[in-house]
Amino acid sequence: MQPHIKSFFDPVTGTASHVVFDETGGHAAVIDPVLDYDAKAGRTSTLAADQIVHFLREHHLTLQWILETHAHADHLSAAKYLQGLFGGKIAIGVRIGLVQNTFKKLFHLEPQFAVDGTQFDVLLKDNEIFSIGALKAKALSVPGHTPADVAYQIGDAVFIGDTMFMPDSGTARCDFPGGDARSLYQSIQKLLALPAATRLFLCHDYPPQARAPQWMATVAEQKAGNIHVHDGISEAQFVEMRERRDATLAMPLLILPAVQVNIRAGAMPEPESNGVSYLKIPVNSL
Image (cartoon, rainbow, N blue to C red; front, side):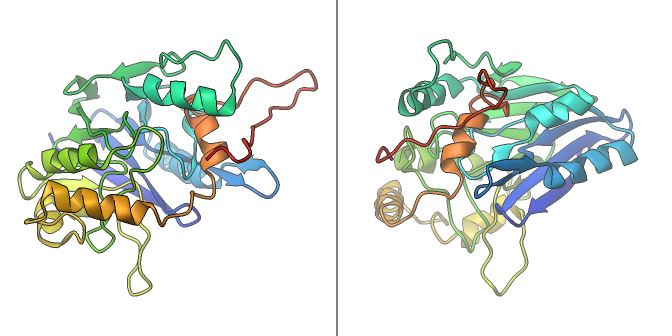
């Protein structure tokens, strides 16, 4: 059975979120939902996520899963918001503890903050099979951008997170803590070994002015045209390009607030004695 897919694009963060559903049974998964965040005011809102809320309600879908491809550095996750409205299990790759351990140290988080992924409901292993209603899904480990990235294969579609972008935009950076260009190349080759017609759904698009945002390209299209990793690019060539390019990139605007929330499965830190949650800004540490 092939999945039905509805995608939502957030132009502020360049993020594509996806609703995958079994039309006959009415079960759904939401992949990489966005919580709006005003960095100037430190205030959240739910405009992006409410588009997904409306779609789920309009189509009478039961939210079974909220799937994160990784702990994002460019947007806050709306996983907890959606779970509060619809239920469902929040899942991520089993190696998320590696990321939590790194950022617990960077942000000097509370001693009781666990680095074993227990903030999430389910930790998925490589090649682990799970169900979305009548749909069969499989988690694929695709480290490189972070050590804990996973993709989700559902029918002829694979939701690949931050591995590749659209062919004219190339591939994701690897200079965050625990990232590795060689691992990313190997993960991409794993994806490109899938059948040529496989649809690869992306987490981000940063389009040139000449085109509108897009979030899907086939394996064949990526192999033929990806500017960083098309057929004929060796691992050594890719690693040299990626490391050289990453050295020129600024940090994402929302990396500091986003990572603190996303390693908590989309939850804010516990409120302090005045009832307010606080996010930390480490100075001269990144």
